[in-house]
Image 1 (cartoon, helix red, strand yellow):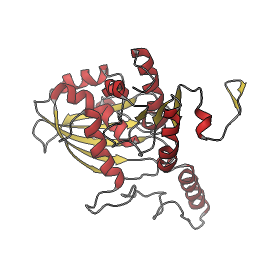
Image 2 (tube, one colour):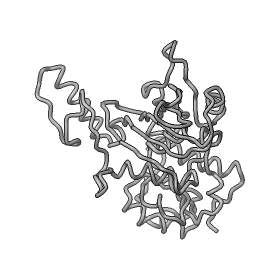
Image 3 (cartoon, helix red, strand yellow):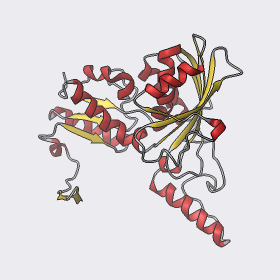
Image 4 (cartoon, one colour):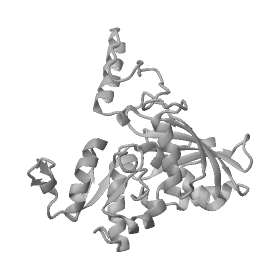
Length: 296
């Protein structure tokens, strides 16, 4: 495989493939991560894992570097990255929490089909083309047609009626922000967008919310870009934040149903900040901060 003008030999991911490596970026299903990550660690390699396999293990840091990089100092060789929708939502919520102290949060997601994988992108494209040609629309990936539709079902349903994706948003937000009792409710929805997720957030805070201060905090936060001028139609969209390092935050307004409440909108690239980029940022931030890559 040619990468950056260099020809590299692709090796099968076997335990011995990690010999002599400092960092391994894992982007595989949970079963593969569980089988190979410990083998990499045995060989002195730091594993930055994108799957859900290790996220809720209390001994393994779950990290968004703009929020809790210090958690990596206690790593034992494996560091987990969060779910895509969690990472994107927290780029808006966390700087506001620092300022006002979050008490509870409600998330409603608008998640692109790329979060399901390449087959889902192909399905949306095929349905779009079929509609344009007047042909019958077929479906294989989703239980319903995704073209011209939204599907309030991501991951499997649990006994409490919440999907796995919704539960992840709750539990991961608590762990990353260090707020184990934080009240979070999420509704996760698949929409006919190819790339980048969006999240409508309604949050209640401990202290009164000043909009000017909130905007200032978001503008200064390294993971966020503030786009908040609705009068001039300035607000984030998934199309504008595809292939962007930062997540866009806008539509800030006082929540009319919550005390000390704020409503806002976040858009971010689920394949970048919500996945691969976050892992790379963890490694870069650890090196910059002088945090050892080797497990204690």
